[in-house]
Image (tube, rainbow, N blue to C red; front, side, top):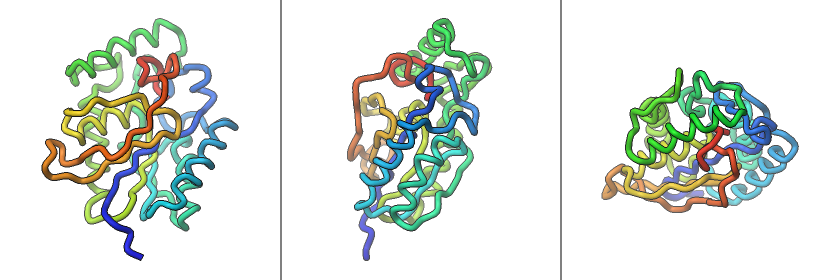
Amino acid sequence: MNPGPLRLVLVRHGQTDANVRRELDSVPPGAPLNDLGLSQARAVGERLATHPVTAVHASRATRAQQTAAPVAAAHGLDVVIHDGVHEIFIGDLEGRSDQEAREQFDVVYGAWWKGDLDARLPGGESAHDLRARYLPVVERITDGAHGDVVLVSHGAAIRLAAAALLGDTAETLYVPNTGLVVLVPDPAMPGGWALDHWDSAPPVPGDVTAGGAPR
């Protein structure tokens, strides 16, 4: 069966207890999925079971690999693990869940969306750093590919990478747990990709894409 034209399907991982605690958790392997997260992973596997998925990739984080597993199983595929597509490193704020830490993150995160991609988390990464490691992985896994190429990753990483792939011309939105961002190649676009679909939901207080702890 012809899998059809290429689509890049970016999937955010399911919920973890660190999410519930609003804990800044960016260093792999990180927290595993909780019961709700495992249920969300099964649901996204069912959602993508009828799609022409030709490859399933995930970050080094446990939560991303657990989310990817049902998707891969539905298509008889293995999950391919990659360095470079994990969450943006929080640095000195890692493991914290206090209001001061989240406010420090908010300042830097807000700067990125105002165009200051050099703004850096204390002891951590800038938006440029994230893109420098994430985008080459996207290039490798989509080069010569067809059908739906699934990459399970993380909230801030997906938003920052998708914005770059779209040439920083499109508004990006909060990505809920197991939300999908679907991009299609388009040489006419500044970043070489066009937006096909973006799952959105009301931001969860304390979540990275609402201006809070990364998940």
